[in-house]
Amino acid sequence: MVKIEQRVLDVVTATGVPFESMACDPELADTAAFCEHYGFSLDDSANTIVVASKGESPVFAACVVLATHRLDVNGTVRKRLGARKVSFAPPELTAEVTGMAMGGVTPFGLPDGLPLWIDAAVMERQRVVVGGGSRAMKIIGSPAMLNALANAEVVDGLAKPFV
Image 1: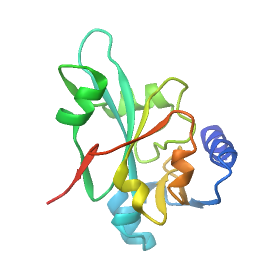
Image 2 (image 1 turned 45 degrees about the horizontal axis):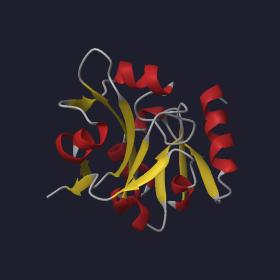
Image 3 (image 1 turned 60 degrees about the vertical axis):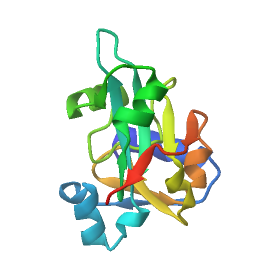
């Protein structure tokens, strides 16, 4: 098992919320391919997206949104970061900030001090599937496991449903 995966399992276990970990083909780790191949609904799949403010000293946050929603980067996220301009962190920067590859980024095991914002719609699901720290693992459980994280904050309007 990859070191990051073990760290993720340790963190999610510490929440005390029941969950399951699931191995997946790294080639199928991206949300749409994963859901189609493994039979999960996009409604139950949540992505962890790292955002960064523009400028000399960027400020970062990790945002958890349902796969059926789009992150409100230029509205809610920008205001919460207190920045004039915000964008999605590119894969290299996401890996640098989180220690995780795109397709495996998870709310579990993020660096201390990195804000974790969870869209309120995620909390309405019975269960959610999130990354497992690498492209080869997913974590499945109640959204309560996300809210149990010390740095987590549920945010109304963080994302909007795709039309």
